[in-house]
Every structure is written in C-alpha cells, then in structure tokens.
Image (cartoon, rainbow, N blue to C red; front, top):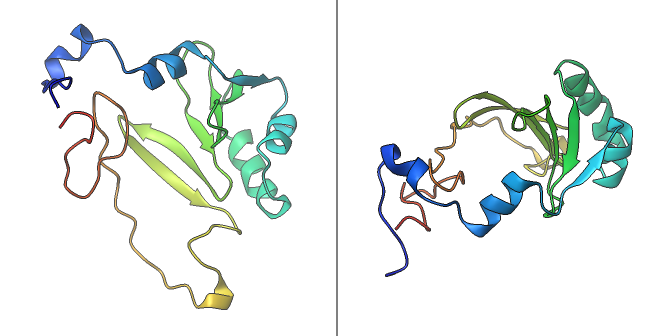
Length: 146
C-alpha cells in the first residue's frame, strides 16, 4: 500500500483525484440528454418506476441531464453544478447536504416486494469518504485511503 497516502480534510485540494473521479468530474464517458424522457428510456427505467421518477424530476431544477459511463443512474444538475438528483433503476437519491442524500424507493426497488413480506427497516445515512466520494464500508475506513 505504498501508493496510498493518508490525508486530512484540509489537504484535499493538494491531491489529484483518482482516475475514475477525474473522469467523472471532466464528464468523460457521459451521455448527455436534452429530454428527461429520453434519459429514462436510455437507462432504462422500468415503466412502473417512471411516474415517481417524473414527479421527482419535475420538483428539482435542472439544466443538465446525463448518464455516466457506468450506466448506473441518471444525474440531473443545474448548469455548472454537480448532480443534485440521481435516478437509479429502483430508487432516486436527492442531495440534501455534503455526502447526505434523501432516498425515494420506486415500486420495483430490489429490497423486496409485498409478496415477499418485506418488512420496514431503518435506513442509516451513508458515510462518504471526503477524498474519493464513495460510501465507506462498515469498518469506516476507505478502501483507497487505507
């Protein structure tokens, strides 16, 4: 692990982002859309989930719509800002603060269905690595930071 550097939040600006983060920030591999419907089709989002997705999209200002190279979600953002709404196949996340998101589960959410007796469960707010912007594992230590 000699290639990894332990940093404190104050030194974030001194380090170059990892290749994946740099590509995402630069927009490399993104597919942009002018129309939310075209993006919902390109993801593709299940028909059962589209009414809830449309409702969220209509309530959040956005000028840019894209799907990243990973094809995991559709991002909606005001011009020149990072994504504020992220529509995934089974849920949507709305950024409510630094590293904090409010989740809306869609009808086809893979956490279970009424037929399987899905029980209600508390959803803990994920803790995100301030350097790599990825959810931390249960250990609380970023795999890339060490």
